[in-house]
Length: 452
Image 1: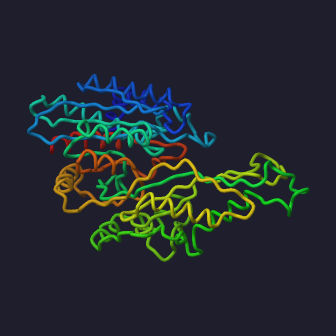
Image 2: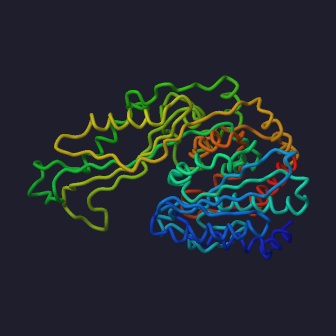
C-alpha cells in the first residue's frame, strides 16, 4: 500500500493537483483577481483535455465562473457537478509551517491552502470523472455539466447574479457536490441539510481622530469599548440569541432527524480534543447536535480597533470594525434575519457614536432534504460498496450558500458527499488533505456516476 501511495506522488495526476494548489485564488481579495482568472483558465484547459466543452463567464470585477459540459446519452439522468476553486486567505501567515501556496508532502498528506477546501475535493472528483469517461463512450454515460466558481468563500455573488440567466445550461436531474466532510475515521456521510448564511461588516465611529487617552480620557467616547458593549448585546447570559425576531419561523428537526444526527455526532470530549477548549458556545442548555446542526448562530469573525502592535500606544480609538456572520436554519428568511440584527445594532448603538452596516453578502437559506429520497437510497448503496460500515447522515452546521440557488434554478436533486476530516484544518493555517482522502473522493465520483 505504501508503494502505491509513493507511486501516486510520481504520477501526472499528483503533479496536476500540486499545480492547481499553487494558484493564489483568494476570491475575496480584488488584488488576487488575476490569480483567480489564471486558476479558472487552467481548469478550463484541463476539462477540455478530457472532452468537455468549456467556457469562462465573468460578471463585473469578479473571478470567472467556469461552465463545462460533457455530452452523454439522453437515456441517462443529467448530472450537474458544483465546486469552487477559490480559497480562504492564508492569514495568519506566521502560523504556517510550510508556505501556504507551495504544496508540501508530509506523512502522506499534502499541505497547502485549498488542499482540501475545495481544490482537493474538487480535483479528486474531476479525476474520477476522467477515469469514468475513459471507460464509457457517449452512448453509455450521462451528460455531465460542471460549474466551478471563484467566490464561494465570500458569498458567490457573481454566480448568484448569473445563474438565473443560465437556467437551460444548468438544468439537470441530479446535483453532486464534493465539499463536505465524512464522519470520523472516514466513514461515509451524506449531507441531509446545510445551514444558510449572511455575513456583513459593522463599523462604529466616535471622534474624528484617535485621541490621547490622558487628555481626553473620561470625556470622549471610546469606539473599541462601544463595540465590545454592542457585540455583547447580541447574546443573553445563557448564550441564547438576544436579537428580537431573528429566530422567527425556525422549523424544528423531526425525531428521526435528531436521532440520526446524534448517532454520528462527536462527543463533547472529542470536540474538546479537536479544538483545544470546552465546546461551550451557543445556548448552554441545548445539546451539541442541536446547537451545531439545527439552531442558528450569530458569530463574531473579527474585531479591529485602535493599536494592536508591540508595546503600548495610549489612545482612545475613534473607530471600531466587526465582521459578523450568521448561520441560518430552515424557516428563517435570510433578509428578515439580517434586518433583525441590523435593527438590534441600531437600537443598541452606544451614545455619541455613529453606526454603519455594510458589505452584506450571503442571503442564503438553510435547507433539509427528505430522508426517503430515492437518490439517498442509491447513494447509500454506493457508499456501502465503498465501506461496509455504510453511510451516516449529517446535518451540516456549515453553509454552501449557492447550493440552494442552484437547486432551485437547475431543478436538480442535490447529493452532497465529501471526504473532509477535522485534522484537515480548513480555514486555518496548515490546511491539508491526505492521499487516502483524495483516493476516496475520486472513487466516489466514478462509482456514483456509474450508479446513475
